[in-house]
Length: 356
Image (cartoon, rainbow, N blue to C red; front, side, top):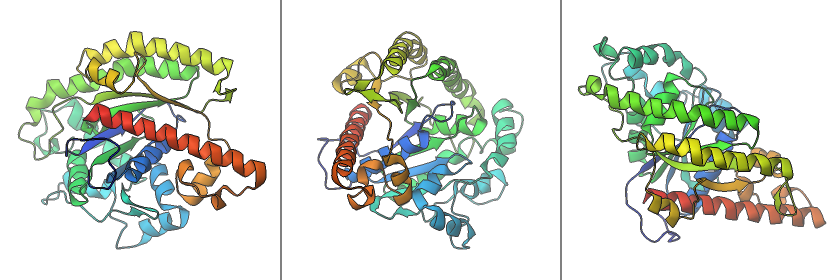
């Protein structure tokens, strides 16, 4: 850590990459990435957010609408993004992948962005061919590890402690290699019927990606860019966007949360265990995670959400003025703001404890 905060006693001075993924849409992956990244930066860590989603929602949230358009139109910055960053590998250009100047958050000097690109999916066909025919085309061997190299070069440039990688809701080749790039991953969910379906699916898909990496590593031994050999470790799930009454989830959400806990414990954990995607039981226990591996239950942001987007900060970083309320309404929003701050702080402390 290269900051003033001593909330966590001692951590290894090794950069960690954390993937935020669920192939179900609308589960707040981008919001989660932004809020956790900002909180880690507030805690004194240097953080790089990576926008791996062609929709570029993380880049838009980070930069704001006016700055976003200018970034992709200005000759000095328009090529500083994830797609153009890996272009040497995908276009067969005989030059190494290099770091570039990354945007810094306007109100958080510890927070950086590796911007996305709306045409990132153009790299999908050649990358898919590299993954499905690893021994057939030597010219494609550099593709799977190219994203990892780009991330690590930029992390080195800015002396980054934590990288958070936001993926789009798809089972694509790009998502596969970005997932395998991570040291750890978390799964945001909404407590609904589709969350259960998604977790059942992920219990098969994510281990299959890890198995692919194990099985095919020999084909990429001489590649200039490599994927990490170790599988990403499961940090936990983050249950979000549910309503509460008297401080607890309402009955429909509580029922679904209980079902999700059972599914994680009896389906997800055994599947991840089979391919070494879990931390030790002692580590989970030490940070207060039960068998459900639930990092936190985060209620719906409600009226704070649009203000967060308007001012390009997390809900817990909004000032009283930015809450745009007065009297009892202001008091209620301020109390919610502080509650969310404590929630995300605890999430980050648990993640740091697991990653020690």
